Length: 316
Image (cartoon, rainbow, N blue to C red; front, top):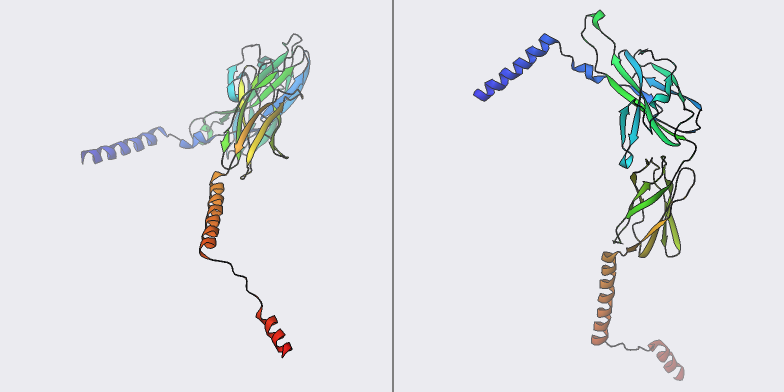
């Protein structure tokens, strides 16, 4: 009983507190949408590159949107970490200039295009540079209507992957390949890693060739960014259920500019052993049945009696 009274008291206390301080749960529902979600470009030192982002207010109330910018660093498996606006060897936030830094008021459902430029310094270091154009949204103050407070701010951004021309080292390798060396049934699943050994990002693309006797099958994978000094995992599969014998899989990958990575191969042995055993059992059973029939029954040749009766009538 004490426990029941305690729970009831806690519920009443929370309800009264919310009523007194007018806590609004709906404030946490603020959201922002943008497109495009990424920019990829190759630029020269001293260039000015222009772009734009469309910002959308999907809420049923007006919001205020403020443009921001940050550097980012990439990590293993394409991980992205924002690192602020401080100048970095691989950052580009200081290169970004918005046409207007003023806050934008968006009515419910409204969309607005935000223009910006990226001014590449004349002494920019060759290779990959990364950053993000961001937009922070806040629900407009409701005090004039007698309601309280500001909504919870939300932030979204477009990733910027830029390559500055010069002494660019775009190199990589297929660092590992994993698959089952023996399978009973397909599909054949392949997992491999591509390591970036250069000083700029790239998106590996290509195909995997599966050679099975005189047939060749091909599959591909989704190209995704690999940052310098890190590797990323890619997956593909050959969707064939019944295969028998050796299947040689070769990864033929290349970078965004067409430079090929050193191919790597593996041989998978396929044998549907359950079906094979069933077939062998059927063959053995039929062979034993034949032996039993030969042992217990004799095959006798039966002559046609109709011909003999006709010959006898003819003689008579």
